Amino acid sequence: MNPSISTFSFPTTTVFGAGSLTELSARLDTLGIERPLVVTDSGLLGTQAFALLEQALGADHRGKDWLIFSGVHPNPVEQDVVQAAAAFRKERCDAVIAFGGGSALDVGKATRLLIKRPKLQLSQFNYEDDWTHLVPLIGIPTTAGTGSEVGRSSVITIESTKRKAVLFQPQLLAKLVILDPELTRFLPPKLTAATGADAMIHCIESFTSPVFHPLCDGIALEGIHLTVKALPRAFRDGNDIKARGKMLVAAAMGAVAFQKDLGATHSLAHPLSTICGMHHGTANALCLPFVMRFNAERKPGLYRRVGLACGLDVMKQSDIDADLLTIDFLTNFLSELDLKPGLRACGVKESDVDALAEQAIEDSCHRTNPVPVTVADLKSLYLSAL
Image 1 (tube, one colour):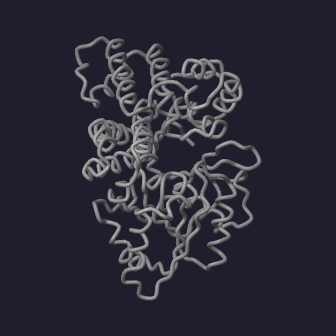
Image 2 (image 1 turned 120 degrees about the vertical axis):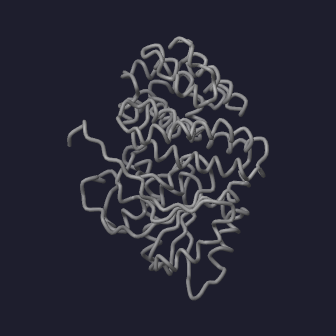
Image 3 (image 1 turned 180 degrees about the vertical axis):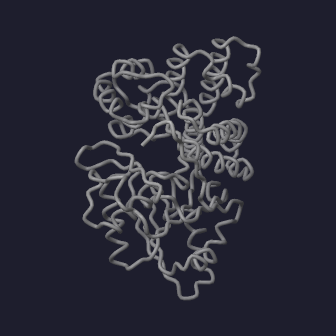
């Protein structure tokens, strides 16, 4: 493959708007789906969001049936995928509805790999195998963060390695995505902040990735702009449907943008989830300012356009000052969402740093960081973030 050649694609059909979940039954008819498996986590089953899904699937039922797999873990593991695929086969389902946050969406996507190849070990997943004709997926997020509903990959912790693996394959794209802000109305402020920060950091890291993809660059900058305007409103008032809707769109935009890949912040964050059990969005938020300072010291001016997207007047500033103003703004922005720097407050210890850095250097995201990083750099960043 020639690294100087890029491929651009934005094919996912997306239905957006308050109340758009009510279109689900008719959309299933159009797709010829009669017996979907809903892949979700147990914590959602008693929520108002799940009640809305039940209403959407139960209304105008016309002979349809649907099943539930609710065994998804907060940081999904390989066994989640194995069990979901087994449930799909046992119940003779014909499609997957992934309903929830990034974990449920990722498990829903990966489940289709094992439906096609029941004997597959996810550690042996090969991008180049024939993955055509996967069963249809409908992605319905209940958080505005990962944007996994429009993504081409699934992040799963592999049993044999106890590490997160990114299973990338364009065939994993959903057949249909429904972005209904009514489903995110019920998110508590803490989760609203963490997932929203994740969406923004996807945009920041994809924009500053050196991979050539100007379509994604434009999407990333607008995603940053939307998040800066909407996330504080959604954090303060969960019933602000306009802000909730803008955050759902920003999250999807972040996931579209990181076709370019991401950066060192995500390489630091992934082990914080697998080793320390941190929420992915929180881990990203607490690492971001330190990675931005590291990058800006080595590539001044990197964050000027990020600052502009945040609404800052940085056009006449020097490269160094434009970066510093942007970094300070985002640090304060996250702090006001109760995402204040300090990994220790989340239970991370200095004794964890060696193991964290060892996993982080093996994570592929840092390979598209705007400047190269070594394991010593990653260790230093963890120590700074403590």
